[in-house]
Length: 137
Image 1 (cartoon, rainbow, N blue to C red):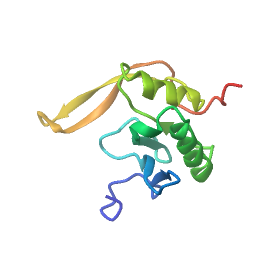
Image 2 (image 1 turned 45 degrees about the vertical axis):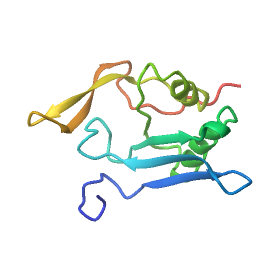
Image 3 (image 1 turned 90 degrees about the horizontal axis):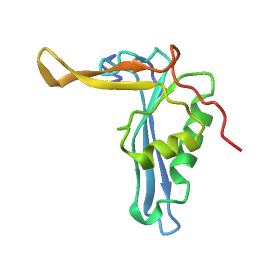
Image 4 (image 1 turned 60 degrees about the vertical axis):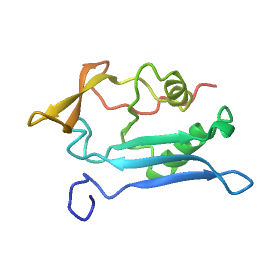
């Protein structure tokens, strides 16, 4: 997507945390905005495709990965983390990482096709992109 000029910037990565036995304990993707996320500014990044192996859950690995992402790409930009509001574990992780709720939205079809659709914030809670508030002490 970068070579085709579809990403809004060049900052994308995968963060993987390995267990002592070498197994991948956690992984998170970092992606810039593209047509599926029209609400993202040019420098914003989305943290997504986050997964912690069942054996490694509850150890703070997802928060550690988010910290690594923000440290690597900088605190002076907007970060987005999309999840279902019913995904309690995912919501807890992003709150522990110090982020605030930006709003609720829906996946909207494009040209009548959901596969080509985009996400829209239909109930914003703020007019600015989500940023870190600072981790609670």
